[in-house]
Length: 584
Ligand SMILES: Nc1ncnc2c1ncn2[C@@H]1O[C@H](COP(=O)(O)OP(=O)(O)OP(=O)(O)O)[C@@H](O)[C@H]1O
Image (cartoon, rainbow, N blue to C red; front, side, top):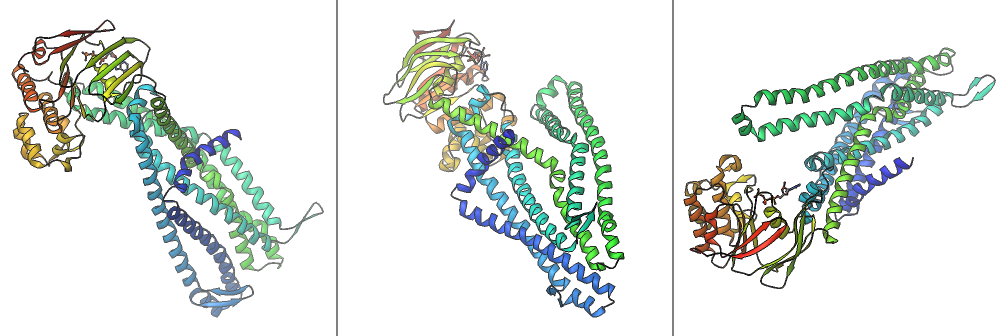
């Protein structure tokens, strides 16, 4: 019970904010309307059950006028005026259409609001990056944002409305059945409304048995989602790494891996089939029996002339409705378990983003802060790895504006990690990095990131391409030696796969020329260029961005000539040294 309580609390933690948000009035109005229409549908089915009874009675009494009136017009009955079938059916259809339409409108609004909120949290404080480093247990954020949010909203509405409808149906038809069923005498005891008790006991036994027969399906369904996702992920990896696989000729290995994962899909599916077969044997048998069971129980009263044919059929109908409503938990078993898993995954994800935000607020790791000064300062910076290994211990240094500094050191010494700390994204370590407030900073990593979409977007990233004139973008491309791409600005391609490594680095140079940052950090940004192109790259940077402070990581000795100073990272220490400045 405590587990159920904390689960419902989690579900409300996810769902609640929308109903208190700025969209709350529209949301509540939509939900209220959907609930009303939902209740109206139950009311319509109660009305139809009385209508049915009148129809069968008209048949039994051979009353053709009453029969036709009940179909196409209306008729006065003992319990009041009864509208004809055409009107009842038309109204039912109208309510059913709008109940679904408005529910779907609410679904997409709710999902849209939640998606925007979760994206905000995920992107704030670079939680998307931190979580991958500090909380690897929070897997597949893409699935959580795209799929789990959708499932949560859909399941919450469908299950919530379904439960409410079943409860109202249950109470309505229990009343109908109570009114129809006279008392019965069992072992000398008079039991009023005995058909109600028969229906409840019958349904409870059915629910219990269905749970017992079908419970194996719950973990199997759960597992099916997992193995399907694993298989899909492997296919996606192959698509993303098609070139690497093709160059290695790794098709046979890939096929083995893919078939292995697909085998897990097949095996679990067989488990589902066997369990479903068992459950279907039970539920099909149960519902067949349910269709004649109330007739068998009520038939003696009919044959004894105590109830007319209409009452007999209405009894069977009401019995079926009570039993159907009682079976709600059984019918929705799979969806309930799916909803539960979804709530757990979203809660875990929200907790991880919250933990990332708290860690930043608490100043854990290397703190990067904007300071009212012109230079950049490292104060007792220690860089560590997730396993605690220390890369750099208590380093202090400063870089003045306009300087050009080369960072060197053996592979794996921690040079890129030092850049990460300066960017304020490295969570392991201690100390402080003070960055000039208000200065624009651009990092060009080893592998330039190219976003999805047009080339224009790729060049201007992370600025909005709409803010930058066409001519400036073309000029930057031409300067960077990518003039042949200037005509393709609005072409959408997988540019990261289309362009060669060197072209991608030149595109990053174009980006730097375009954005004109005050501070430019280059992490082996020319590693894929030939020496002549590398020389042009640095010369151009110095010419076009004379006021920009340049900090480069590079292995090639030739790069040193474009810098005035070197910082060497080795054996956990940062050594400072002057360089003979070259053409810069
Ligand atoms: N996310 C991570 N988790 C664990 N270890 C990491 C992570 N990122 C980097 N490291 C480790 O930190 C060390 C330093 O990496 P870093 O990329 O800073 O080195 P580097 O000096 O830039 O090397 P290179 O010159 O080869 O690019 C390496 O041993 C690397 O394996």
